[in-house]
Length: 639
Image 1 (cartoon, helix red, strand yellow):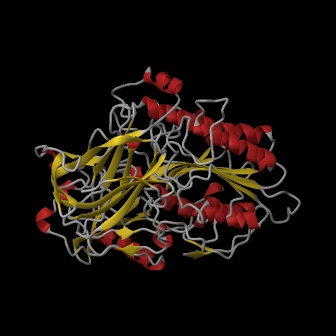
Image 2 (image 1 turned 120 degrees about the horizontal axis):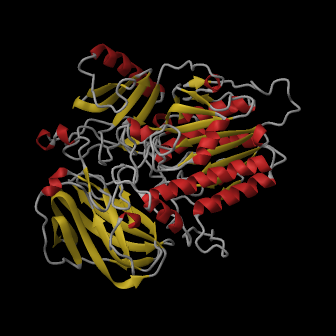
Image 3 (image 1 turned 90 degrees about the horizontal axis):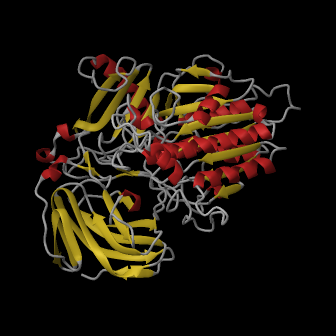
């Protein structure tokens, strides 16, 4: 950790000059190849992000702190690594409050290492960027996605004066286009099909107008371009006419979402210009993780991160590398680029130095002001800590990586044997697509970089995965790492799902499907899966009209992989698809665990489907209950 006393580099001797405003724009799931900054897209159009780049410095090697959103968001606000603050998975919308990370004691038989139980709220013990700026006279406003905890861990408890729409969920409530399902935040009645990004930009404009005469911190964290995949119909139709089937980026819906995101950036820039405050405003633009390649929309994946490998939820470059721009007129040369490595943890200490605010805080990140001046950064390396196993296509076991110069080393915890790790080593200068693992050829390089990883884990007091005592070598196939396939629902599917699909009569109203059969025993549903696609569905006897619903489950399992639930809404076809689904992390340790999966419904719910795993095994479901947002029982399944 770097102990930092940051002073007024630009403000010294200029006390009469007002401190600069700060506008932080964070896109959600925006990949490195999703903008026109790097020449990797022929389909998506981002003229306002280009306009932003023309005003400042674009970083070609900008990394998120994590390949998933909540960890990165916590790192931006604290300047700390996920290894230190403990939020390592996007579980902050779930009801369980966890403030200390712990390693799980066991895992599925094909996993060599266990995963962690992540911290699920941004602990109020941290002095956030918003709190520091507020203490120094800034008006502070948060607009858009949060995903770091509901009350008492909302933006209002972390230094923000304003929080719109005050929503703790992982994405927009229901849809991007009104009507929405946000609590206490309705669309403009004069705009029945209002887009959430247009509305968020409108709210942000009003905030800037109110505070134009004093320093303000506008934290504009977009919902875009996270699922659900939804956009203005006129834009979808526009891009549908431009689809090139040979282009891996060919989703008209996603292209439309990109355009609405870009329009919001333009609205903010236009407002700063109109209020004549652009010259005294710092703008930072970044993404919380890499592009989402693993859902499906318009019959294809949302995007492609090529030439990078992998995407969101993976340790590959496509999961952590994204666009980043910093604008500060007269202090950052317009239209410039930097090859210096930067990371989410760097934004906080950088803003302190740019605003002239002194602080005794310690950060895992560093100030990147030297790079903004066209120089180099005095850092040896950056680290990414992801002690989870997502099972998406391109998945990797629990890991930590280090970037040092052109080198990238990934350590897989206990990949060889308990206490002995395995590695992948890449030279990104010559192999940006991470195709050639040089670990066996360069043992000295591996050893040197691994020492940096060990020092990092020690310095951050990281909670690390344990050897899995249930590991069974007979179930382990190293060739399956990164080899999952994608079903039409958008879920990852292992190749063992090619086994015959089983079919039987409904049990207690539940119809088995895919690679499983269901039986009833001792008041529980016994799900026996023979492959990678077990699921069971239930048609409700009456329509459920409540909008906010929570499915409560008690499951014990010796299978593996994440769980999903799907719901069918009246009049919506197909019955189950990715816009009406939620994933949840299942503990496959053979012990019963409780799960709560929440969603917002646009229409009456008529059926529910449960996908408890993505592999062979035995799953026991002893409780299934549907409740509303106040905890009132809507329906209970009796076995």
